[in-house]
Image (cartoon, rainbow, N blue to C red; front, side):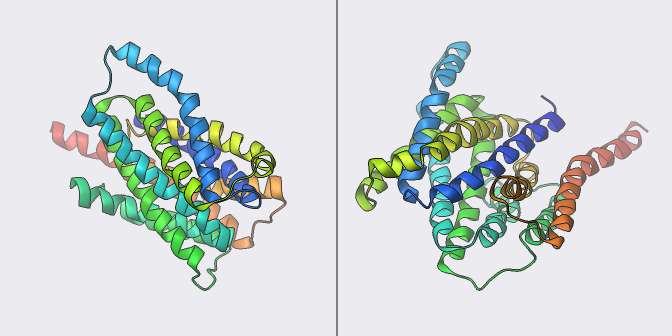
Length: 299
């Protein structure tokens, strides 16, 4: 898979997540965040497990204990991102949540440097800022007073950034994207269900009322999209992946308008253009610079 194909796979994952954002918001009226996250990722783990076992058979060996430990670490970061996003949605607006979650486009290159001393291509920094401004305009060009939900959303962005960086690092080292996916889903489900049992009541009516949303985000937003993310990140860098995944906000606005009747503010069109431009720049500029430098090296 080429880097361009990998980035298109990440774009597809972002589109699926954009649709899932609508389901996540709707479900919060019927079920608590811990049970919602736990059930969605339990379904995702069961859906991916047969494919992970087939991957193991193809490779001819089980993941090592070290690899399993690293996959659990990714799952812990995934749990942090998923649960803080859901908790934030209870007490903040979708507008604020979508913008603040998008902060991960800036956090990803910083975490990559801090954890692995991987310095991104210089173009990542202006492009990350471009994408962040695009998300801000897409959300309406304003941010209400910081609330508790907003603080949860900022923390969510840190966890998502950590998950993106760790997933890219460990899938490259293991070559087992499906084993990583199944393990991170199971880890996230176990942690969320355990906390749900401790802190949230659950009724059959709540599950039935949110079943459609749980199945969609479990099978599609989680089972499919996160697998696509892990596969795509085998062939591109974490900072570039973050730029393409940030288009989730663009698709979220589209599906919000299509399914919930939400309207896109005038500034939102400029935001869409900026996000789209950011994806083009991060894809094309490094390649163009590389081609320009090649003749000089040949001389």
